Image (tube, rainbow, N blue to C red; front, side, top):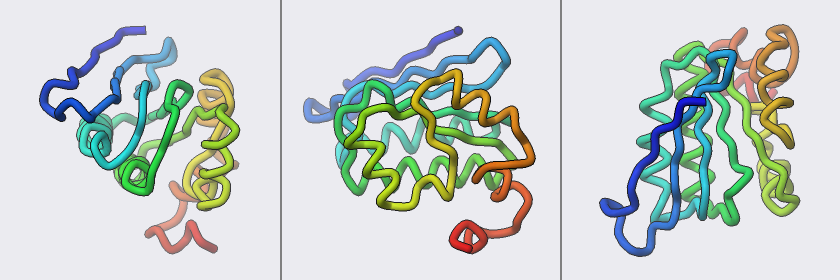
Length: 147
């Protein structure tokens, strides 16, 4: 995988989030996060996902994220929606039980599939006719996600 990273210098000493942009062997853009996704680091995620919004396939990997607050969740949801609005298929990798529970409780899986491994997330993007990402791609507007 090709990798590019970003520095914490711009976001201040409180910001502890590393964002790595990679490309999977099948060409899928992978945004791998390491650290905490919170009020201080949400702008970095917004910026990274905005840069990847035109990717036809995008996976956000939360495997190395220890904490997500409401601002971080909002940045994640906004980035996923932006990519989907541009016609992209999206998925999220998350295997930490507390974070999986947060995503389940907030209904995030209605927006994009959540898988425990990168391989499973990539496989979910290979099934264009089922799953939350497919439902979103075939409907207009975000209200269809809540139906």
